[in-house]
Image 1 (cartoon, helix red, strand yellow):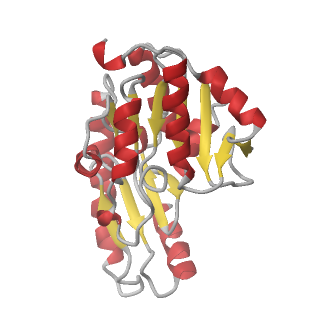
Image 2 (tube, rainbow, N blue to C red):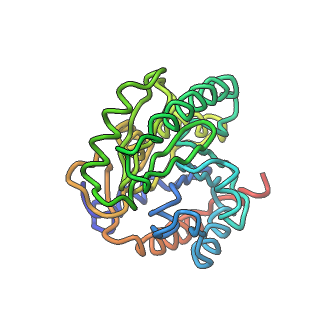
Length: 262
């Protein structure tokens, strides 16, 4: 994984620029800074302004772990595509699959609420029901390692068995199928008729995109990670501003048509 703003990275970015390029982004930690309370997250004004400009040249997708209802209220604009629950919700044509995910999530919630009611579990553990997936937060517990170990044992007993994706003091419980951020991105590319895509993310579930290793997808991670499969990285979250400016300038210079007029 190399810096995007290196000679190699900029050459790849220039190669990716094309009329109709799909520009897709994670939200938390990518477009919006990580905050202590997830409910406080909002899209910064300077990011929104650039996305609105970028949207004149390119379709925009937000692919997030949040629910679609939750994320829409935090954006302040309407992207071309909004996909929630790590790729499980909001993808056109996947409505039947979403209903299956919803049923599994409700089953997990009932089981977890019963199990977490016993005194052995820290009261700081919080369930976040996203309708199509479940997040279990343990950022505010007294003993993080102990709670993480207890939760992993608890998840192993759940039925139906979930796919567990660990994040920053959070476990994401997802349906065990092929729906994820990577498959959602491919579906959106097909719907948009996009010749390629740029995807920017910062977390474990974004690796479902990075691991695809598609030549028509330029993958970028926020901050370096030796374990990431992303093509390139941005050293600091604030570098997303420079990336958006680069995209706008290069699409404009390439004479990309006005996407909004299509």
